[in-house]
Length: 267
Image 1: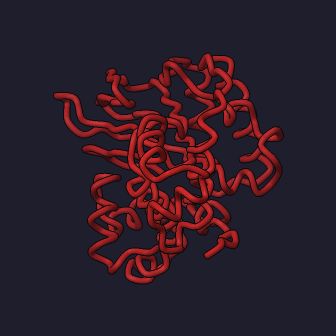
Image 2: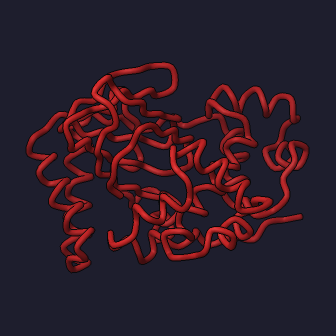
């Protein structure tokens, strides 16, 4: 993705995001309870463990380039142990200031935008991820609360099914009151808000593939197009229509723009 942003907020939805402000202004990054200024030319590597948001500096809106790596699609090619180390890591400081890696990121982004051969893009991406792991001081992601992990897995797998807290608690093996407290403590948001963010992530891929907004809303569990638009704008800072416009002509097609395969879910 690339474009101009005036604000955004992303909940943790099992994606890694690598970004780079490229214009005349940086932005202020808030990640869980901490904030810091991201300057032009600094890369940001955001793991799926934390919600994060961006707001403008006094210089105004900022231009940026992004690579979004959805874990569900990456896992479909093998188990977690085969993923690049970066995609099994967390970061105390998500900002990486490396001119060499910045140059390679921009080259990879341009290769993706212009439709360079797949081998070139895949090799460039995996090499960049390997080098970011060491430069960015990544650390192995600790094992989380197993109850929360089971709840997250259920929400990722059964995002199209009706979900209530009792059903989710049974899937996680605890009571709904304990689940809610432990889920909020580890993830930083409620199960409902997490589920909405998962559905937004699927809607993004449908929109990138050219699906009409009304159809994307229906297929991702929203009551109607306006319901999707409200949540979409609240999280990303722009409407689904604007999102499609930003992706137009960027080559955003292929596996990354399709919704994740839907595993079977019990009743």
